[in-house]
Amino acid sequence: MSLGDDIAFFEKLPSFAALGKPALHVLAIGAETKRLSNGAVLFYAGELTDGGYVVQEGALLLEASSVRDGKQFVAGPGTLVGELALLTDTVRPATAIAKGQTVVIRISRSSFRKMLEGYPDAARKLRDMVADRVEDWTRDLGNLTTVIKEIK
Image 1 (cartoon, rainbow, N blue to C red):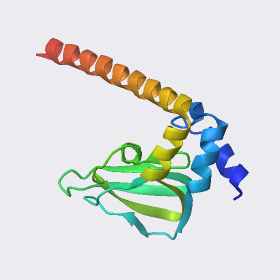
Image 2: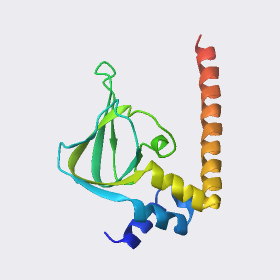
Image 3: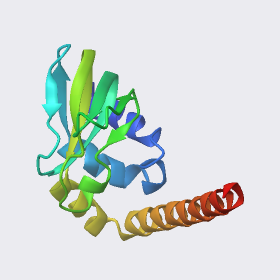
Image 4: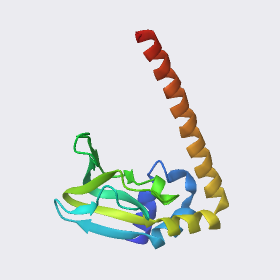
């Protein structure tokens, strides 16, 4: 895919859409495309992070780090995996395994931070999006607490 194709793809992602085309251009320049064959492991649970991945084609099976959890999630095209890793050091909570032929775009934390430094409007928009999510989560937790109290 071309640089323009990558920018157009990023514009469709909820987490990136509000950042603006110039900021996405910078992300696309620093991004790295990886092609994975069926069953290939992109990363393992417990590994330190240095960035995130966007599934462009195919899918990733994300398996929780604990076998007892038995939790799995399939991340398809347009899914940002490791969103928090774009901003801070963390460890991977799951192992990511390609389901079929899969293409991901890797965005390093350093590239993402440089983009935010160069485009403060994009950084403000991202901050506002995160704040909105936290408000939603807080409201959802409050609703859940109310439901639990009613059940008791």
